Length: 364
Image 1 (cartoon, rainbow, N blue to C red):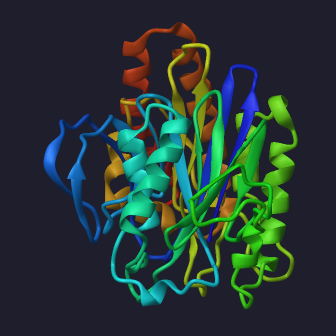
Image 2: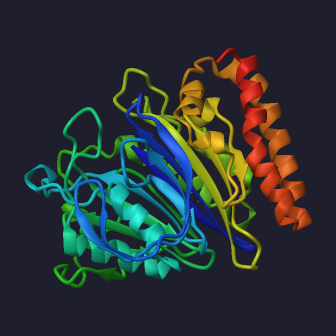
Image 3: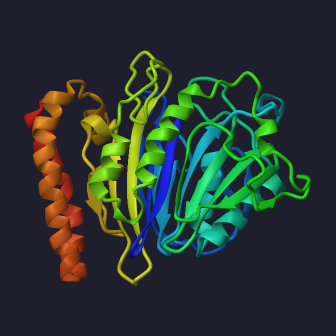
């Protein structure tokens, strides 16, 4: 289960995603430098030609090569979701995971249009397959939201088949097929006017996703007035329809809960990209500001993720973490407004120490 959204603002686009994974699956936030082209590149299960890589910030399950979400040096942000279709992924050999495709798009795209081409061409050429979970055989297909400061796309897939549509002023996706006949681009095997929802698995309930989509859609509906705080509140939302499935998943008895989250401000005015990244459940976490490539090194350590996931009392945690988050955001805003790259770098690389101090106060 995951939820992703984007919404246009006056100077560009917001991108945000909650990554819902196995409750004990460590997730790391890392900066990856550029890579020159090479002969071969090993993804999770496949070896593909290596076209080189743009630098990017990615949030990655520790056992995977691919990423759940991220943003690259050209201001392209990408995230994926598990979706259920009438094609059976268990019948397919190991191939590309949705997370592989996210990383490949971050490595190879200079725009959202490029990311659309990378995602769909890789899926058409190599297919999808192999388990995307660490403790059980769970292959699945993915949908994707790719965006830059000016445009974005939703892509929905089933095996090597895909459809896509522009996000317009904003959009959100969850764990269900959401397109019908409103797609504007597709693989050659999709007939004009086809209803892609006909590929949705007939036994896949949509109730768990529909109310989460309503929550994220309400955030998108705020339009250009949407703020960082409003997006963070949406990603922390625990509203459900009685199923226990909410945008912030926090069900220890479930096979999935939110293990990482990210918000990105993509700028069309030439200002640097900035991001706020959270380890563990957002409701008991901190959105730590980062200025790529400057990132608190602690975010790439399993230890920090484990400490956040040890927090269980939301009221106790928020009493300490809310003031910390406010202070970090204000200090990051000041550094950003200064235009001083060295100041932004020093802030980002030192933010982890302040997080560490707060977690010590909480006994983790």
